[in-house]
Structure formats: C-alpha cells, structure tokens
Image 1 (cartoon, one colour):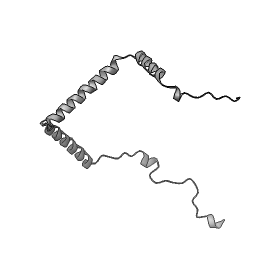
Image 2 (cartoon, one colour; image 1 turned 120 degrees about the horizontal axis):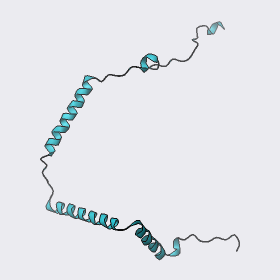
Image 3 (cartoon, rainbow, N blue to C red; image 1 turned 45 degrees about the vertical axis):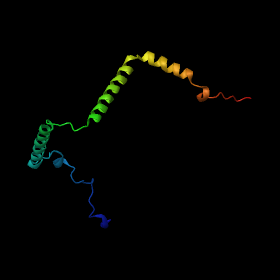
Image 4 (cartoon, rainbow, N blue to C red; image 1 turned 180 degrees about the vertical axis):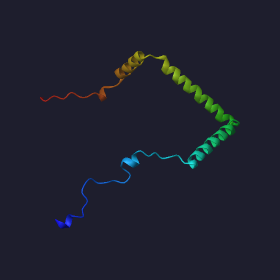
Length: 111
C-alpha cells in the first residue's frame, strides 16, 4: 500500500470549469467594435452607390422578364380562382378517367 501514498484522492479537476471561471464574462475588444463599425459604414456606402442603378438589360431581356411576370400572375389568379372543394372534385374526376392499371389486384388464398 505504500506504493499508492502519492496518489491524489477525490474528484477530477477539469480546466476551465469551476467557481472562479464560471462567473467571468469575456469583454468585447475594441478591435471587434471597430470592425463592426467599419462594416456598417461600408454597407451604407454600398447602399448609396446602389441608388444610382442603371439597367443594363437588352430590350429582349426586359420583354422576357415582363412576360414571365405576366404568366406568373395568370398562374396565381388561376389557382386562386378555385376553391378547395372544386379542386377535390376535379381531382376525383381525373382519377375516374385513369385506367385500372394502377389498382391493387385482389389476391385470394383459395383458388
């Protein structure tokens, strides 16, 4: 038993865990604050620069975008015009017109 006299008894002690380190809060450094201020200033400058935006699209591209928006609005209005009940009825009519190919075949244990 003399061999184990130098062994420390008790619970393990972990680095960074304890009464003293638990209450401490890290302070923000001035570098971080300056960096954040710099980012804010650069975003404001970019917003001011974006105010003078010049459209560089060709007439064909503008016409294409206009037609895309028009078709999108037509789709939205078409979907909004039907109620849920009408959609269910249309779907049921569609299912009635399908072939029986996808039906589950009846299986009997006796032949």
